[in-house]
Image 1: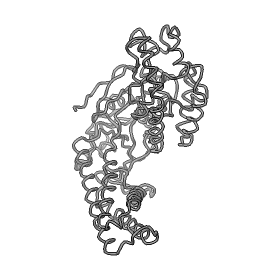
Image 2: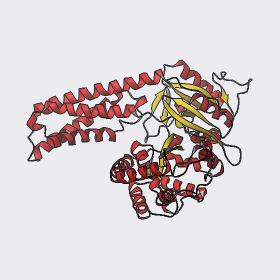
Image 3: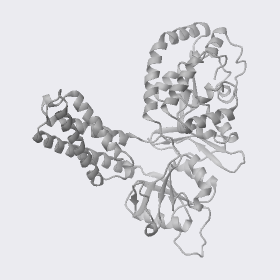
Image 4: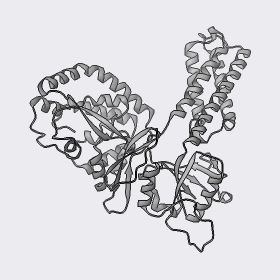
Length: 490
């Protein structure tokens, strides 16, 4: 698919960006003081390489056990061995920062952990009475085959990832003083393809024509408007900070780039003066030391998604008769169009179609998208009022949860028009999109439903995200279940 590039429209107007096949609604916003511009949206990150690595490592571990005889391959022993291998490789950080990895760099960590896993497997076969003892020759054969398969499979995944990055490099901005950024940009452009396509230099000052240093080979962005336009036109999702996040030169830009959903990387332009941080392994980019910093995105814990899948699937099956009765009643009493579909903004500003039972018919789509309370909304049949009052009209959102558009617990999703409007008025509103939106949340169980304070909702939503835990999700679900029948809708 050909990426669609769109020039930034006037503030408040939505536009569509299609990057790497992932569509997103991008909304330009201006803060209350009129100075800073924010953006919500952007393509989803690609986790396919990490999934391929997991599949490759798991398959190699499974095939390695075929060196054992059938009596030695107890199903529980094999399953535990595969899980142990994946856990050991994950503990070594071998599923992070795949784009910069080479298989030769990983060999010591991979081989050492595979040998440890086979030692544990052998010890289990000796100590557990139900298992057959593994002889030394089978141990050596299985370990060697497992190692070869793992290294070969990982090398293939790394090669695929590097080829994809070279074929479709990531649009990137350099942030730092123009003379230094010009020197770094020239070095990066002279080097081998690295999967990065530089599109501009973000600098608060322009270079003095009489000063020393080479001319900038890229456009120099000196205002927030320039940065916003470059991000939208080029699909920028990475910013390289020259000198580190603590450099005073970067302070005017960090907040704006974070709101633009850029991930941050640090590059030291003076390697001789660099003191490495032992907490984080470093890579190299054209000879410059290079490492990721904490990005703006909030990673979703696997336990949260597992809870969503488990609960939503069970509730969908249990609620199927109720959903059928509601749909038939609405179809007979209100005519066609039982399901109401509306675009809402989800995690990282990505749009999705929210499902509800239709309890009211707006005059036109524009009224539904831009009016907080639709005209004559309270003049509806008794059954529709019943659905609203008991929140049965929202049961269809369990399908959104099952699909992954939403979560059971999280900030309530809103329409793009109101996301833009509230983002202008309430500080921190855009930060609600760090976490998947939900059917219920901390704000809702504290009485913030329906026509209540957006400022209060925003505060509770961000507090929930900052202090998230899986147990807190369970507690919110329990409290929501006890208040299921309530007088107002959300």
